[in-house]
Image (cartoon, rainbow, N blue to C red; front, side, top):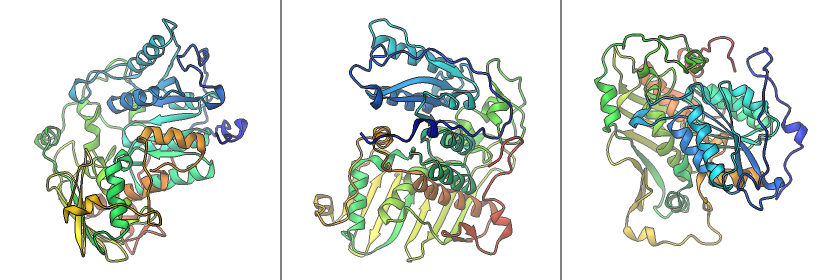
Length: 455
């Protein structure tokens, strides 16, 4: 295994957005063998903390814990325990702590592990024993926590989209590069073998010259319909016990508490997420970027239209149509058509990748029986998105969805939302990362943050 960076360097934590000292009471760290890690030597162990323990946070945490060299020692969430999550999921930091303790206890013939639970992510990041973290919070927290984690010397698995704005995404990339960290964006469709094979076919000209990419993101699921039925603003309620709501808001503007604002539903409020455009868009558009070879760039013209409720808590866009044009003339056309996925159209054929699941269709059908030659473009295969992250932590080689990739995909999603918000096309410079000749549009590239938070 490649030697990791100097321990003292990677633990040199730069306090972020706060000057107040934090008093810590750290738990005892038990041995690898007593944690059920068997013969994994300490030098190969990856000690992890999980920041954000809602439904997806618990999923990511469980996947990480199943890996033999991972030792989860800490969790962090602003909520103790809640059953307000979509689908009735019960989640929160105490739920996560119990899951961790039960997992390691069962693996050690009754020996109880000790998992710490924090409300403030900065306390977790100050721990010198933690190598890597998962960041599975609402989108408006992704950037600030990822930046702080990079500055603290931690490697990062950050759920998609990488950030909730273009400016925040670029700041994450800068922090990761400057601190020589590994970051995997949670666009896990990119790790699918079928998706990678389809991308190889496109890149190697099996469909001829690529000219059109069709993005299909339907909004017909029960949660979409529930959001669209919501009119007005739910009444303000008392914040439930055990929920640090002000900390949940964090850099976002002060707003009255209602459960419809939090717990899954935040993604349809532009202050905290980007609606379906960044939710599924961060998967579907990401595959478009991969197959077209655009991972380090983006379109130059953005046209987008959509509808948003005029008087609703939920202000993200539905009924969207968009056209993004790249410098080489490739057109990416998006709509709410079904099924969910991405279609690559070339002069000699087409390939469709279903999201989720990765089923492939093509014309001619024989495309799917092609073999990629030794000297052609080969993208390799991922052993699984979280597994690929852990392998990268050990090898110090880039994962399949590094910060720059996540940022470029997220940028397209955000630019489409900006064009819909303004009601006019915009021209994008993917090198300078500015919207040309449009001060009003450029002002929307980054959020106004509530004190004391800032980029």
